[in-house]
Length: 73
Image (cartoon, rainbow, N blue to C red; front, side, top):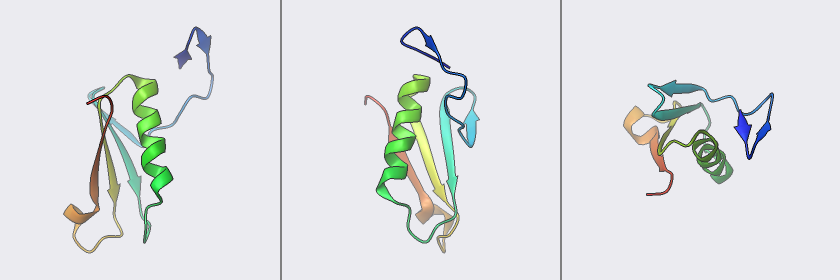
C-alpha cells in the first residue's frame, strides 16, 4: 500500500474485496465492538473505496448480521 508517497509493506488485510469496489469484513462475535466499524471505515479510506460490509455470523438470521459502512457519502 502507498500512503502519502510512503510505501507501507503491511498495510491492511481485508477479509474479502469484491471486484475492487466492496470490502467485506467477516466476524463471528456475540457483539461486534464499535471500533470494528471504524477499522472498516479506515480500510475504505486507505483503499479509496466507498462501500464496506460487516458480516457477523453469530446472528440468528444472517440478514441481522449484515451492516453497511460507507465512506464519503
